[in-house]
Image 1 (cartoon, rainbow over the protein chains, first blue to last red):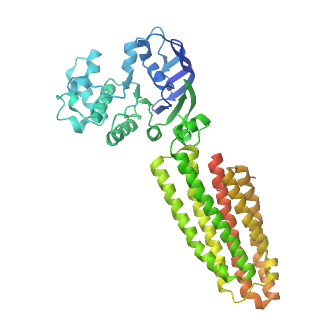
Image 2 (image 1 turned 60 degrees about the vertical axis):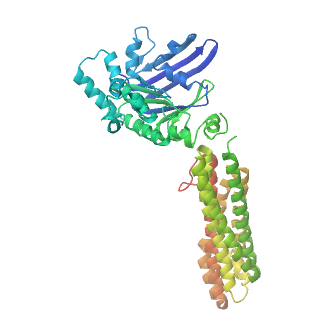
Image 3 (image 1 turned 45 degrees about the vertical axis):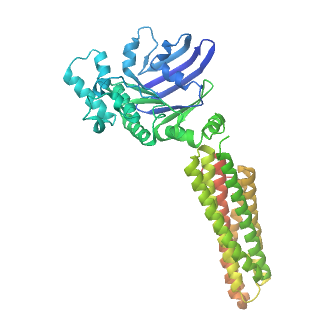
Length: 252
Length: 221
């Protein structure tokens, strides 16, 4: 087990001829929230997808360099990608609950992993829903369809689904961009709580959100990691003029 | 281009206007003191209300920018530094007004020899130079120019430090001027405070431009 939850070394990523990520190097410490910011097309989501090997699914993708999660090279030949994705949960921009009951949505990952013990599943589902700060709102309707929940509740349900399998790392791709300010506030509170147990990497276009919830911020521009520092430093005294211009709204 | 650069430019322009008004207030207080000009005292009194109004307006502008635009990095430092500079400028305006009030209460013109020996002219010249230099630094966004102010403040401190002794000697030599000399002591204290406030403004400029906090640290030119 490494001290560092996520480490990227000399990473270059290409989609066919397009050079999407250029010599990326950084280390995200365990139990911290890291925010990726930058204009559209800068490579932040591409990098996020490197951590659960979702780029493997895109034709024409190739890369050089190394990506470590928990000290393990996740692109090593002996890595079982299904196992990797159990330890790296992902939450997307649009809530994507399965057309199943609330309970079954959260139990899904456990069942896929071959767990059959009903009591164990029930315990884990309850824990995950509580952790996702959703329990009080759904405890009486666990057997109802997840599609009946509001957008904010669905997003927290998706987070509960990711938590149920106890991942080491949670990736969030603009998790609150489709939500109203109240639901956004709940997701942000939740992220703040979760960092006591998990490492979280979040892609966001909402700079204030990055400022509020993250410990570290990375600014990407045209496939380059321009600056990686404590969030407080990035938002008060960034080193690179491109970072300053972006966060102050001068370009991008 | 977002709206924030325009908002910050408008804020800068208000501060610039207030700064010039305050400098003029101090110049007029000097003239009224040196020439026993009570008409000018009335003008200073009415302009003091404008200084206060500027302070309120700039405060409100800063509050609006913080609430509506959530500035960060150099923009945030600019707004924070303007908030403090605004307070400092208003205080300088108060000192100019207080000196005018002293002139208003005088029964006869100040003795020129007393003014010279106590260093009033030198203090005024230095304080005004500090204020105009800092304004220049603000206008040109030149932190080096702002740093030059720190050394000038030392001269004001020195004059103030020796002022009690000079005043005591003068009172012995010119007992009839005792009231005026005591008033001049008060003017010296106010001008020394003008220097302190200007130094604070220069520190805020360095904070804005270099992200460096100089307050309570040793100043280096």
